[in-house]
Length: 457
Image 1: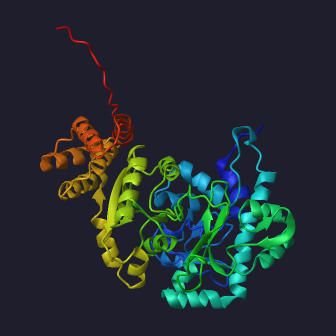
Image 2: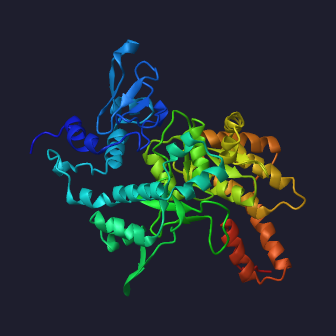
Image 3: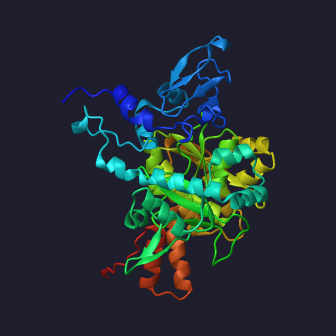
């Protein structure tokens, strides 16, 4: 076995299959639309002049000598400047090119494996939905008009279109992929007992692309116009869609990571020059938290709605992230406040950035929530217990802030006393001793038992 060379592997197997702009790896260099010559104009990483250019399939960004630069910067070095680590860069480049990194016993061979070839169905699906968007321009035009996106923003999002399942099946078949392969990735749906019956819940929708751990994309779709209803929802996700990898996480900017729920809110953050990603839900789940930690994220911010769902999502995100060492900040949106997408489309980028500057550390956020509960007429002991249970998961810095502000409130969390109060209240409401003890155990973790002793005399 010959010695493995990372640079040779990138040169022969990765860069020829890579469009680093399309993959979003060079977003911080403000790439423009591809020219007729095939290159992307962008900012030169070396001299910062907007005279650089990059050809897909190349491993370098070049700058013309007329600006007294003339330097070539490798894609690797450009990504280092964006905050990636060396290990992340290699994995990210391989994933973007749909090339599987060689295993230790495979080093020395640069031939793509059969698995790599199979994984290219995702690339084919991207090309098909992009081609369908060109063939059916009206839906995207309606979407752009209703949402008020600029041409540059539409070009950056590279949204596709899903016409019909039959169109997609025919295009995939022409590219050499079977219905079973497409169904396995949620591109098509069918009844195994009726092989000729093919459909998709994504038909007639604007299409976006969500990267998955297998190196492939899954599709999400939005109605071109309107909000839909319970029978025809505004957003649909493919059947095999998982949200382990947050959407747009690879489009890194040199800022703190900000997590939001919606895909277009994540795009809005990106347009504002902020490293934003979408969770696809109201909270950072455990799998997402582990993925972020593995990528070296040490601090993030989570933007939540200022309602009960936002509070619940914030509590869960704090527990999942702070519990594994990621310092978490919360950005609560007030009732009726615009979301990031609406802010950016309305030209309120400064307001969005100001909102991010007002982020609240998890420890302080929990203390503020505790004060809110205590200020109510009848404090909810269950919520108080939940706050203190979450505080047990905080990182040292966040815990110090929590303890400091709770001390200022003058509140002493006597959880044993609270468990006793709850037990007494349940008995007073007609519960049996066994029922009350069970509820107390479930809500507080305390086990209440009674032992009878015989006392002489």
